[in-house]
Image (cartoon, rainbow, N blue to C red):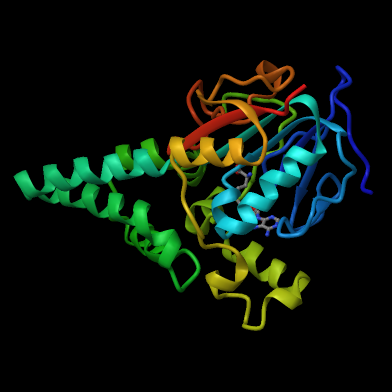
Length: 282
Ligand SMILES: C[S@@+](CC[C@H](N)C(=O)[O-])C[C@H]1O[C@@H](n2cnc3c(N)ncnc32)[C@H](O)[C@@H]1O
């Protein structure tokens, strides 16, 4: 069993599918191992004993798994939590993304000016691209390469990834590791470089050249809204499941960790997100 880190307050917190955003005093896991990240394929049972963590967090991971595998992962998160422990799941918010799409569709139909059409095209890409793309980065990368984006919309919807791409200064300094390569994250959300490394490391999963986003794990396999995610958490045993704000959580010492806050100010790191928490019955 991989080691379990403890926070200075003595809590054991697990970040599942952490990518490049994690705290060293938490236990972190992702496909690619590193000094502070346990390498683990989340389609397999978690490599820890039952009832060992006080909190489990995952952000923008569940949607990368097929529905059945996502359910299994949540059941695993339930298993490793101590009674009374909290599980926070963050995913792209299907409801909000659909609302924005409808808004931009209506405006574009009414006005047909180039700015509205540009915002409409981004909203369509936001909704569909990561589920259907056949090349790393998909339509989003092409749009960015062409510079054919509405700055305010890109900043509003892509959050820290876009701010990093634009080189905006970081205001919130902490011990949190954040992906240094924001453009990579924005281009692919599970970028080309990462996909290549992962393809080498997980040969059994990649019979192709590692660039196929369907094989590399870049694509989204499902999406969730406040109803489906809450129901899923309840189905695997969590109770008191509820939608939270980006800066509100029952995770111990959340004010210190605040994993969903931007490093550029007091707003969400990934603005298109839905945050749901539930507790393992005590
Ligand atoms: C969009 S990134 C999110 C990273 C980070 N949690 C965040 O909020 O910025 C998705 C993460 O899920 C991880 N992931 C996707 N499929 C996985 C799998 N089968 N096993 C382990 N990790 C996986 C990827 O490696 C990647 O780091």
